[in-house]
Length: 179
Image: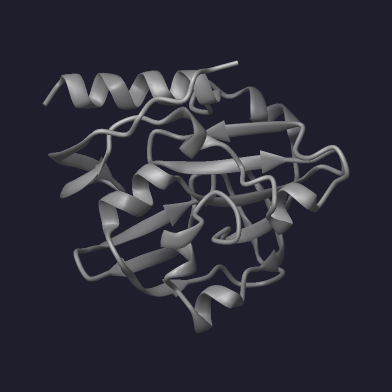
């Protein structure tokens, strides 16, 4: 079990969605990079997600036993973007290839695109984000999920681009150390 680190707030420059964004956000806090156990995402299955994976572009993927996954942006991305003002959601029923653009987040600081880390069909979108985009800031690893996708090929979950929580946190630390 990872110990919970006290978040440090420092003015930093962070990479998100191919852009560098200036931010005052927690550098690293292992509890921040976990699916909220009280959220609809976690409670989708009695056991919670089988896997949670992360991308270099700061998206997360919570995978379930029925070959579906919820997609969202990480706490790191949410903090880097600042207060969300608009969320563009993917098209319900649309099929996306791994790496395709599925939506975007606009904030008071910037706008950033969201890409799908896996191939599949969007079976559900989080309409709550259209009415209250700030949910993505309040609970990015839970109530702020973007879409649920039916996985086309579960072997994509083994892709090198998808990281475990530990690897993702290491990548964040490496990013901070390089600045």
